[in-house]
Length: 217
Image (cartoon, rainbow, N blue to C red):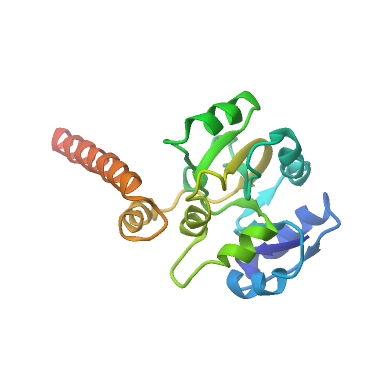
């Protein structure tokens, strides 16, 4: 297994946590796409970390055990950790988008203590070798969220959030979420129905913000 922290200047803290629970070779790369080219011929999962998110003990084992628990259903190609902040709450910048339209696999995931996801934000995730072979790494301008959305567009290429796998991000939330959601409406990773649903939700959020500011004034 190869491990790719996205921020080399912070990667050593992540690498130390990885070495504590895994014999994996830790490879620090500035460009994930370049690193994945070397992984294409390696039939193993690739662990993608954003360099700000430190996996906790047992995080990798929990991810690796998930496919066996999933059984004979379509094999997952992305497995994500839940990412907490320093106080133990879910980190808002690392919440995945759950699958809305595929009900059967969604219910199955819930029954197994997992969540069927449609896209994964930067944090801690395993990517299957067949996914890298079929879809490649992130395209120019893509982050992990858009990349995983492109990989998980088909219902038979599921992604799973594995809550038993925990990682911690020490920094507070940023301000990229609304820009990321706007990119959803123009990219190729989402179906027309999903874009319509996201536009509806985004419009509702904007309206809520406007009303809140009006009340404050």
